Length: 96
Image (cartoon, rainbow, N blue to C red; front, side, top):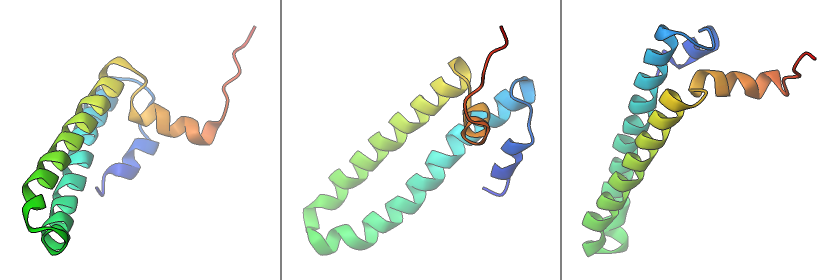
């Protein structure tokens, strides 16, 4: 998580950027999954005793879909680094 700001100084493309994007695209969803699993463990049994297993399975499905989506975006699309930078750059006007 501490390396996330590094994406702001990396170039838009290159081998190091692709590796960084790929690692970050896997680590961030897993980090969220671990945290959310703790929340589910604490609060779901208080709501319904039989819902913990299905809620964990649903969380695993969401995490898997997120990892696959980010991998596709990082390997076949612009990548997380370039996409995040474009939030601050705004619209890019092409030279004619």
